Image: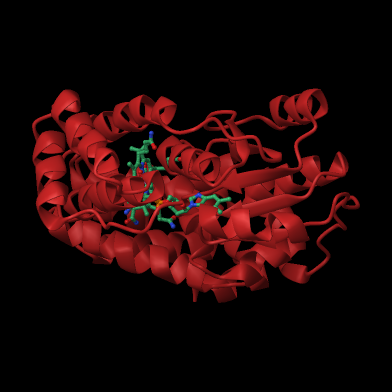
Length: 333
Ligand code: B12
């Protein structure tokens, strides 16, 4: 890699203006100019794409962006990443598969990871968001990668990351996990049975030589929390339905106008995510998974003119619904 020439603030601003204008061509030009003046691809992706997506996330949370604007901004960066990719030298190193957990729709983080790995010399293949276990195992058997990398952005994906880890380890392939769902904590990865955790794609490139060539099947999770997690996950649709029809929650949400940006819609659509976060917290033995989500959700509701006590109502209804699960009750306390 060449000497680091960081992305300049003016370039970040120009990229952000292009994203706001939905101008994919202008956004690409900024990124291509950075590459042309010697900024390495990983830095271009980090400074422009990750930087811009962080602003998107902050704006959405503060009610400065609608869901539609969030999608439009993400689409610009996805297109830019796709167009930049062929500009990088074709790698010849070990091959790796990059995948998202089932129902994990944050493709852009995994895409950025894929291209950063390629820039680091690995032959990385991205199998797309929400990869099913069958699809993933079939691809592993076809291509025999040196390792599988799983990306999870939402904490509610942690239970399905576990399922993917079981599937990947069943093929004997090492599995490295990363993404915001881990909140930088390797213990979460270890409790799920991953071979390793990496915070960045560069970290994966560095650890490649030390990864085992063959791993054994994942041992079953036997903690009391894991047992509860299985039972809650098996009835999660019912749990969500019961929470949404709880009188406290119905009263707190009141009349709902159905708009995707209305706080009542936002809160109601988050209930499945919260239930899966509880399951995830039990598996990784970390209540912070749930407390972090609650604090953020309160902020989201308040910024939309809603009453934060509505979030309390969801938590109380969920705690009441899960009262026969002592570990879950502790996580929600
Ligand atoms: C865009 C976006 C979406 C888009 C995604 C579209 C797409 N095509 O990707 C849509 C609208 C679909 C979406 C939906 C949701 N989202 Co969203 N989303 C975001 C947002 C704003 C940007 C994500 C992004 O593109 N990041 C850019 C990449 C480049 O950066 P990154 O994520 O940090 O990834 C880097 C590292 O984490 C690491 N990395 C990532 N994966 C891996 C894997 C490995 C192996 C390694 C080594 C490293 C690694 O390297 C990456 C590159 O540098 C984030 C906020 C944010 N600041 O990131 C929220 C965010 C991820 N979303 C969030 C939530 C809650 C949701 C929803 C549940 C909301 C809802 N109720 O509908 C759903 C869940 C959908 C699902 N099941 O997947 C939360 C997650 C909180 C949590 N921990 O649970 C976030 C963090 C918002 C927040 N709280 O601030 N979202």
